[in-house]
Length: 390
Image 1 (tube, rainbow, N blue to C red):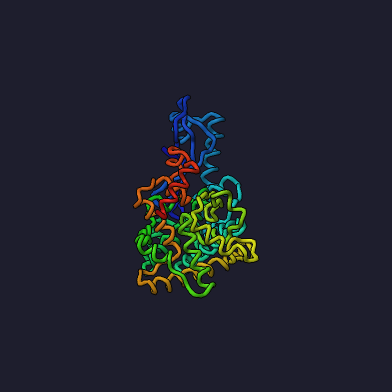
Image 2 (cartoon, rainbow, N blue to C red):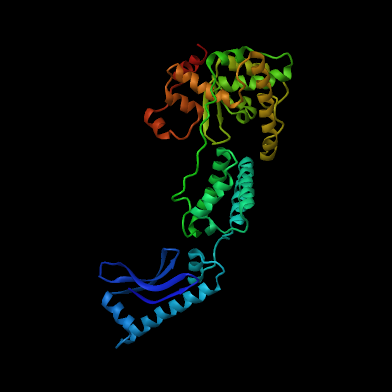
């Protein structure tokens, strides 16, 4: 049931009845049809079907009904006039113009990305901001001048095809970055593009190595102190529940409380509490007399930009020594992340509770399980951690 159904720029405009209320009347709404999808704007008028039909016919109307008919006609005219001024139809933009509100945010994809990046930088998430900038560069390499509503299922499939020579990890990273920006601006997006689009997930390459290879690496040492410093970081990571190199580099004596290492993980801000094994304590002792405020002589500051520049170099230095050690021992070359995987896998093979392993790794996706199982006591943590070296 509609009044004055008109089509401009492939957008159909009409007045319809929608949603009957308890009084038996219907809300009168402006309907916008575009590409087989309808959107509605309530006009604040409620009519029965009989009243609506009578106004539509326009015969023997009461003064109030004439006034309503004029309002409906004015809404149609206003809608058509707005559509004619639009270079590209978007219901979100139309609705803002029709209601007399200015759009609160720019709908250009580039500017939405830059705003997101700015927020990350203001939150000291330097690495993440760099990844989003890389994703934006990739998208603009595929197509420039995009607005949010250009991102639809067809675009996503085309962009994914454009990235076919990239790794699945890279494709997933770019698409997840785009999805995050879309989600941040979802209220000004006409149709959510990721509704029926699945972002490819990279295969989880298992990076754990056999316990016998780990044991060989843990006994290995270099001649030069500088080599042993970086190699000790790998060992310390393994002995401390696969601690991240960035987190290790930022540790101070304040992070040692009684027999435990306690710190907030940089990536998630979640507190990690790990029982310090004797081997981990020996590594700490090895560097305690070096004039530095950190446990390890790796950093001279903690500003986000400094850490962004410095930490990758530390990781590269560790991986360089790992490669040399693996080659010398004749085992498969690994990286710093293998400490984390190997720690978890070896404890699992020793029948240690998966819940404990997940908790010690600082995983956040099993919070329900952790609450159900409760926390581990200090004695339990000590005994379970000692399984790593027995």
